[in-house]
Image (tube, rainbow, N blue to C red; front, side, top):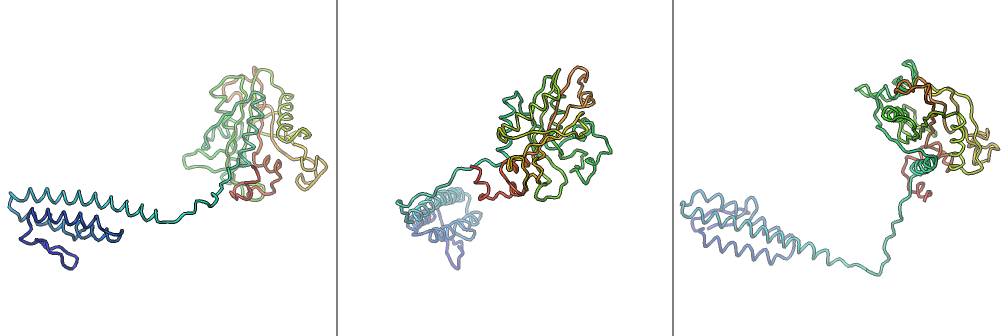
Length: 351
């Protein structure tokens, strides 16, 4: 027989198939009447544990005559299968019963979870896409990891330009980089599409800027490109004026100042009149009445040559603006870091 002593089962000469059948019946009965999880675990350890009855039986099979070994092996497997299944079933019953004993007051009001809101950055991107869609622009997107060719060379940026320096750009060991602007998407579109082209390219950009109230190493841009046979600076001014009124309100003014960008010629800075003070001058606009919003200009002919366009046959304009800047101006946000802190108290204002 198998004798249980000090937590161990010892194999005895009296153990046989009939005795093992009785032991199985006893084990199943003990599992059925176990009052709680702790009692059930005691039954498992007693019969199926590492030092329980079943391992002892399996260990003693080698000393049995061949005629008995097969029968005892089948009974041992039956003990393991039937008892194990019953233990699992009883455990589920006991656990569900414990949960059922927990009192619950069904008259208490439910916990209300308010619907989420769009993030200010997402709101600006979606609103801008809708505004430009009314002018025939579609949305184009590209990878965050770009080649130096598309990010700089194809955009007529010389090798000595400061933006190529490691202090300004996140370079990767492969020689690629985290894009500093979404302009490479414009290059990708022109490489794969013939004019007319009218696209905007919203997305995330990366620069080695020290984070402060107005700068972040990771930020968002919306750039636009329009290429056709007779596109002029007047088209650019009309497009930016329409966008300004739709985004900021009908009373906003727009002005253009001469500037320089490697990929456009002529180039301009586009300013919107301050919607906080209506152009009279305040802290938001630094008492100038104007807020710089976008850089723009006519696409440089050398950029067209890079993508295989004939610069004598097509013209076009491009523009780029910071999403965070628009959000800060539109919603009166004083610090760009508030857009990234994920403070629910702040974000729920934009329902």
